Length: 121
View 1: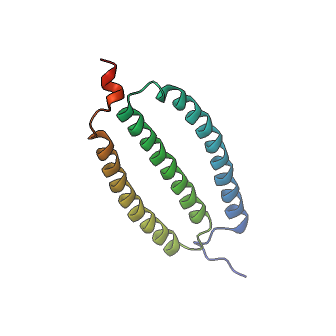
View 2: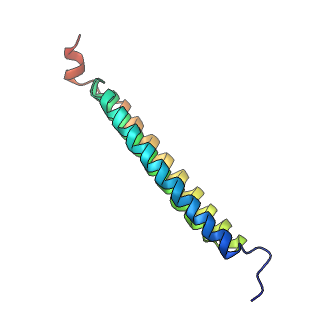
């Protein structure tokens, strides 16, 4: 069967998928260690800062997972049209996610300081 000039060879697609999965696994290990380190520092933060930090880390993790999922889909794309469609869908979803995340962080940062943090004064 003749391959389209725009089609990725199956061997390259397999290599790309494996590379994305290995990178995802490395990120997961790094992320686990980072979460543990941040968790030990967060306990000393005022409630509002801890809430903002926890939420920001959650958003970061969600965004990274979405990026890895997107990379896996791109690796399996059959032609340029599918790549463009995937990229367009990802960009739209990412823009919506960022908007929601900014609202969420805004809500956390606008909270009144808790009695716990004001008791320290």
